[in-house]
Length: 274
Image (tube, rainbow, N blue to C red; front, side, top):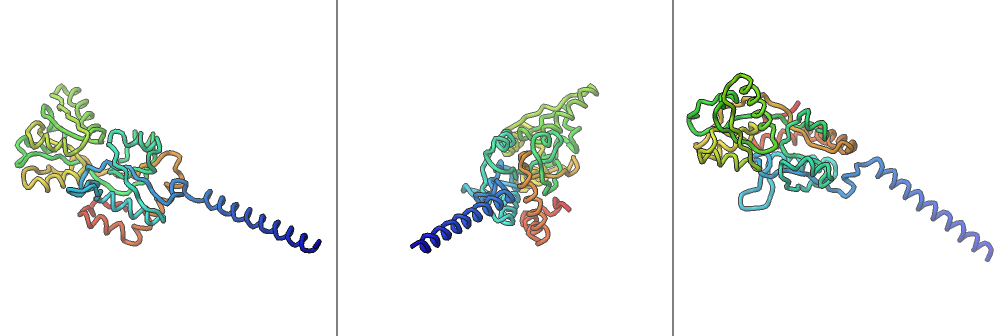
C-alpha cells in the first residue's frame, strides 16, 4: 500500500509539473505574439466609399477594392483573417485610438500631423488630381486656378488641407480665395460638380480617375497637380508587435507577387512602393 501511495504521489507531482510547463509555454508564446491577433482576426477600419480603393459592390454590402484585397492578403500572411469595419473618414483616427479596430487600411496619406497621433506602415503612393466637367470650361490646370471658384472635397482629407493652404497664399497675394465645400463622402462632392454647384473636386488621383471613368464622359481629370505621397496603414502608437508583423507581411506579399497582382487587378500599378 505504501508503494502504491508513493507511486500515486509521484504521478500527481509529475502531472502538475507537466501542466505548469504547458501553461508557461503558452504564456511565453502569447507574449511573443501579436496581441491584436490572438483571436485570429485583424479588425480593419475603412471608409468604404472611395472607389476604387474601398467601396461596396453595387447592390450589395460586400466591400471590394484595392485596400480590401490588400488587407485580406496581409491578414492571411499573418495567419489571420481580415474583418472590415465601415467607419466615417472624419472619425476614423479617433475610432482607432479608442480601440474599435486594430488598424486603418483606407487610402490614408501619411502626414506629419497624423503621425503625431498614430503610426504608419507605407504601402502605396497617390497624388492629388482635380476633377472637372467635360471640356474643363474654367480652364483649371492646378489648385491656384481655383481662385474665385468653388472646389469640393471630402471632409478630413489632405485635399482640404491643400485648399486651405492655397487660400492662405491667395489671401496674402490679395487675390480671390477659393470657396471650399466639404462633404462626409467623396461621392457627395462629385455630385455637386455634376449639378454645377462646384467647379472642381479634389481627390486622390486613383479616385478622381475612377470618378471620371464612371461619368461616361461627363467629367474629366486635369492631371496630378500635387506629386504622389505615400498611403499608410494606420496603427495605434502602442501596437509595436502588430506594426512589425504588418511590415513583414507586406514584404512577404511583395516578394511572392501578390502585391503586384492586387495593384494590376485594379489598374493601379503606378502606385506601387519600392
